[in-house]
Image (cartoon, rainbow, N blue to C red; front, top):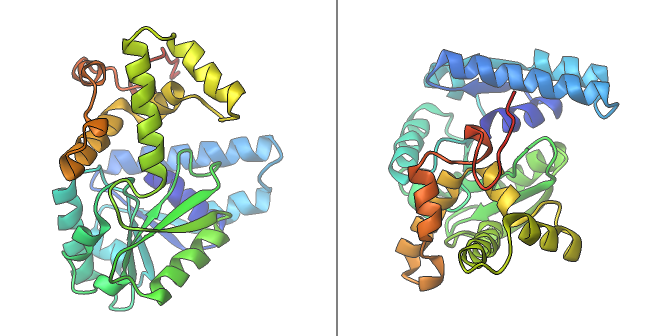
Length: 273
């Protein structure tokens, strides 16, 4: 997800510094960005000048202090682990300029708890992008009880420059999008377990019957079944509501390493060559 956010930021004309702890991960990220831009040019959806500007405006580093220096907006896209994100936010708070806005791309975790790891809670919010970032138009901006209007305005300005339609939601478990998407995905799995219909037919029902661009199983495979399981466990632990309890099937698939597109198999088999 991080490389996609970096791509749309650079395409919007911003100077973007992409950070990761691993050089190899950064090399792969830049290669994916370049491939996306090349494909866009080939299909006539991206102008050559935009491609060149984006690549020229993108730099990478494995040093967080270098990445944070001089930044006006920092968007964190680390794995969905609250303790890890809290550590990152505490470090960013120390390293980033005092007026910088700190955003998280979390799809479900408490933004308020991340803000509490900093001394600038009014400048912390969620910027939840959707995969693939360079195609999906929605940006879910998540406000806490402390987030300032100016921070929200800054996030909206950047989001709109990236070509996104922005919505603003309150910090609550699952926000708006993940909460609705998760409940649909979990019900689809229950239907599969009950033998109501096949994976393909359930997806087709939502795609053709309700106009969804992809059904719940294809979407789960794209997101990653491990990510979906983690969000379900988080929602269940936060609310205690039975509707969020992860299904045995989902837990078995994750335990077996069938995580979706990224591993080549989930509810579907994927050719990742």
